[in-house]
Length: 136
Image 1 (cartoon, rainbow, N blue to C red):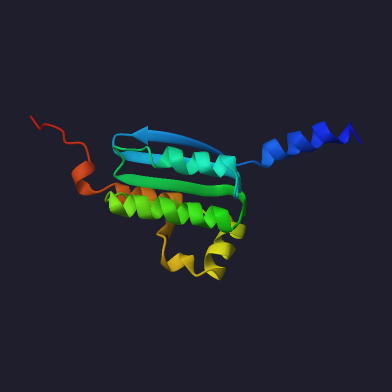
Image 2 (cartoon, helix red, strand yellow; image 1 turned 60 degrees about the vertical axis):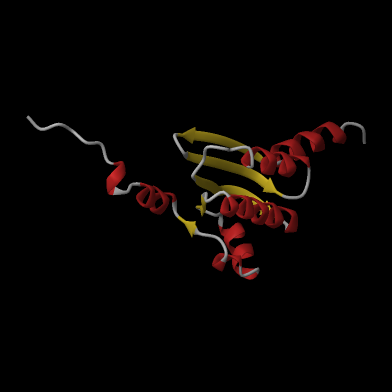
C-alpha cells in the first residue's frame, strides 16, 4: 500500500492546474493545462491573473484543460468580473471539448467571449496596430 502513494501523488501533480502567463505590451495570454478545479492551484491562478495591472486584453487558452468543476467556473467568473471592472477585454480561447460542453450546459457561453486562437489574434490586429513605414 505504501508503494502506491508516491505514484498517486505524482499522478495528482501532473493533473493539477498548470498555467503560464505571457505578457506583451497590454496583452496577457494565459495558457492553462490540467484540471481547473477547486484547490490551491486555482486560488493561485485567480490571484496571479488579478495582479495583471497593465493588461487591457486577457486571453485565457483552455485547450489543454481536461477537467472543470464549479470552483473553476467560479474562478473564471470572478476573473471576468475583475476584468470588466478594469475595462480589460477577456476572451476564453480554444476550450477543450469537455470544457465547451460544461460552458454550454451552464449557459455560460452567452457570458464569456469564446473564440479560437486565430479569431482572437484577428480581433487583436486592428489597423491602428499595424506597423507604419516611411515611404521615400
